[in-house]
Image (cartoon, rainbow, N blue to C red; front, side, top):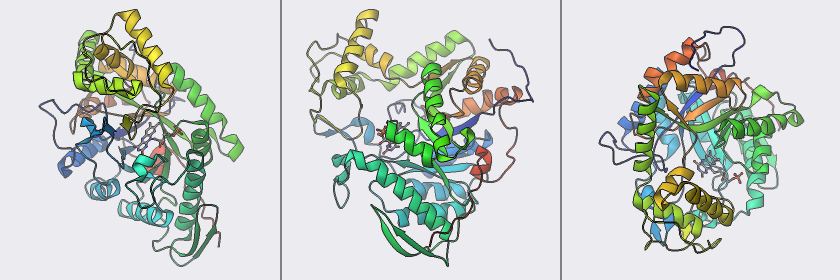
Length: 437
Ligand SMILES: Cc1cc2nc3c(=O)[nH]c(=O)nc-3n(C[C@H](O)[C@H](O)[C@H](O)COP(=O)(O)O)c2cc1C
């Protein structure tokens, strides 16, 4: 249903963020409207669109090594990734209210330097900085760093938790107050070089999904970026994570849950479905379909026909064919699921990959999409969404032009920014200053 009731009472408000398309499986480079993923003009276009749409924040992901397959760089990664905080500092100068979020790894960096860079971004932007703390620890990525893959999987969240705790001690100390931290991973004695940030602490985002990841988010994060985008999976993830907060003396609203989603609009439902199918075909080229299949099977499948049937050989777990961030989980189980989908619907390799690897999508008329996004938030499957457009840099424009006004009419999205900091957009308290030394 697409009724447009304006609610002013207790409707839950939707939070929105914009993911810059770049190195991921959803960006379509073959489209003639695609522009550079590294020119400042592209970042500026998407950020200005997000700010025009009154979004909470702009988001940059991070990859610290190009993925490889069969010993060659994965074709989706050759577009490259500039350093995020530098990009956000430049965007701070051309935006006024939009939050600015960078993904920075807590495995390969050091707390003092990371805290200093986020404190600086928070000052330059007038309180709009956010840090997405990720924990990738694989030895392959580690080879780009001085000490190699030096952290066991089990230790990455203990390091991340202490990393964030120490960063907050440094922010609280500001200039002129000594810092003394003695922990399992870090020993710091000295002083910080930047005054306490305008937000007190820049907003902390978490994007892992294991039990340790959820616990870390419950104890320390302000926002979770999740892949659980369907209504049922979203509701169960939402209930699980929110229930973990009380143990840390936190309220359910202290942690916002935002799945990454895509939106495809059309003037009619049928047109939107057609458009979505075309985008999926562009995202999963014949070559990309074979690469995706190899990530599950772990063997060279380059001789297979993308328009033919799935292999009947069994997958080989941990074969090392794919290096870097790839599909996680039990490959035997994934292969079984893919075979079942292919059998049930009579799908080729490429069609199966298209069918099984998409993100949660909202597809329909602007009215229908606004109603569905609203239903997810009122139904406690999410507090908002990180939109992942498929085109750089204009992919967010249709949503801002056509869906945002409908969310506003429904009374579930702001009609102007009421505060100047990202904490204020997200409805988060400014943390008290606690001095430890
Ligand atoms: C939605 C989402 C986005 C992520 N984005 C990044 C990223 O941009 N860079 C990165 O290095 N890791 C990223 N990660 C990986 C996580 O930091 C983490 O390493 C991974 O999910 C494994 O941790 P887990 O076992 O707790 O899920 C992302 C994870 C999720 C779920």
